[in-house]
Length: 59
Image (cartoon, rainbow, N blue to C red; front, side):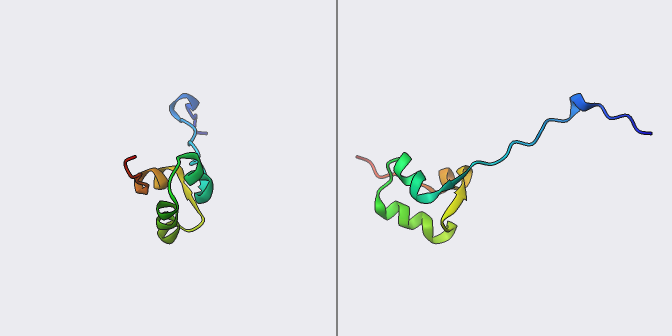
C-alpha cells in the first residue's frame, strides 16, 4: 500500500471561459476588436486567451 501525502498536491485551478461578446462588453472593446477576436478563437475562449489577444485603442 502506498501512502499519499495530500499536502503536496494542490487542486488544479479551472480556467474561466468567456463568451467573446460578453468579454467585449465587460472590457469596453469596440466592434472591430470583438470581430477580430471572434475570427481565430470562435464564440468562446479562456480568459487567458482573450487577455493575451485583446487590444484596446487609445481614447
